[in-house]
Image 1 (cartoon, each protein chain N blue to C red):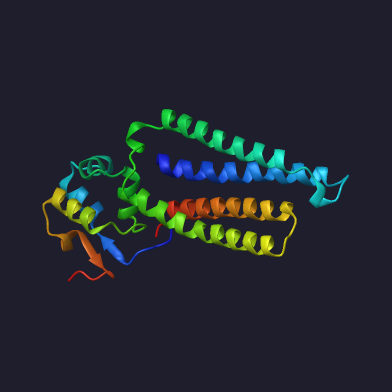
Image 2: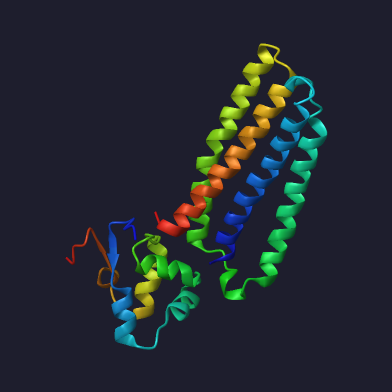
Length: 139
Length: 74
């Protein structure tokens, strides 16, 4: 397995785990208050921050423990990365447009922030899944 | 295994005929990973034209001795 394929698995795992922790935190707090009144901002910022720092640290660890011959990023890795980015980008657009519409109708900030966060996560997940599948099955 | 491309190739046979070229060795000579050579050999990845020419160059044969489109050996 090349370093780039490992990184695809890592970004998938980090996105799913970080968002899972965020959702669990918000849902547990929603038991005692309406959903839109939940103090979601600290949980969101912490999980985003930990996901970013965690990804960086895991990537560094993987680079250290991956044999040098598997660290090369070649034309196939770049092709797969481009395909993954293209697929994931769709959710960034959907998230942006949805957030725009929610802002226009003056929806609570809770929904706007969470739609954007969810679409970021879906974009990362879809992009990573695409890369992993293409690495395994070809294209 | 899924056959993801219509481009077939004789890389494995050419390596066997030469006897001295491993997947890792071929990968190193053309600047790609061994996994990419494996993917090309198994038909899971269609290489760029540049990589295809480089592979043919390593074996010292014309491009269509290495790669065929749609299974034709014209």
